[in-house]
Image 1 (cartoon, rainbow, N blue to C red):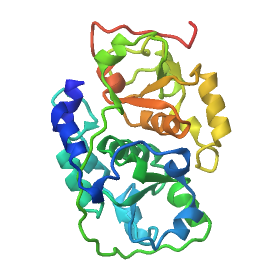
Image 2 (image 1 turned 180 degrees about the horizontal axis):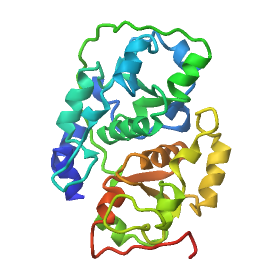
Image 3 (image 1 turned 120 degrees about the horizontal axis):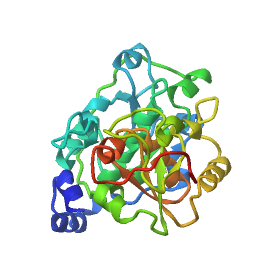
Amino acid sequence: MQHYLRRLGVAATMTILLAGALPAADMACGGHGTRDSLLVSTGWLAQHAADPQLVILEIGSRSHYDEGHIPGALFLEYMDTHTMKSPAGLTLELLPMPDLARVFEKLGVGNTSRIVLYWSADQFAPTTRVFWTLDAMGLGARTSVLDGGFPAWKSEGRPVEAKVRPVAPGKLTLCPQNDVLADAPYILANLHQAGVHIVDARAPEYFSGARHGNGKVDGHIPGATNITFSTLLDGQGKFKTPEVLAAMFRDAQVKPGDRVVSYCHIGQQATVVYFVARLLGYDARLYDGSWEDWGSRGDYPVQKGTVGQ
């Protein structure tokens, strides 16, 4: 956990003091949101488009954004929200909190903002990664994902604009959350632990070890079950219904009250599982280093084959 706090850029005691010293106007920090707040429809967004506290952010390619985007939306450069090569040699890791605050302040985000994220084409995993990042910052309860992203918005004939509206910088006082991230020692200590369920979000061939992925060895974390991230969306690019998603988690042996710890190749696809776990009311964590980290540790156990083998 000290490793996590170092990555946040604050010490544990300072995090507690900072959270307790927030001014009244900035008390809306912390928490992870509810089923009603985490996922919003195109109709909801159209109805609330004029809300002065609303900040709409597109995740995808800049060229797609420039061609046309949801009115009022700003482009979030995904590469600005994470490291590309950490000191540990990992591809994707959380930036320190002060750096993240500057990224989102430039886009007008403050502690009273309601943030809506959407993907431009099929970048739903980067979008949930941004949600997880904001959740780590303490803004998860004020952040929503647009179900279906831009494709759903455009398919309904809703307005699109190419101009970029001016934005006033926001001011963030963060309360970093210490219940969003798990590291390798945490997972090692909780292998086969009742109440902690590890979910591998990769495609089945990577989970079984039949196909080589990130890391020096192939397979999966012992005791993990597999929910491939892309299966959580339906054929129209929207999240499946809560009832179907809940059944998928049950089929993956996730029990009510379990803490869901998800991982994938580098910590991007697994955020889809993280988001859905929060949507279903589970306590959730992301193993940010994911298999790139675990599979490169020579003394960490690895399992091959499908669940039950």
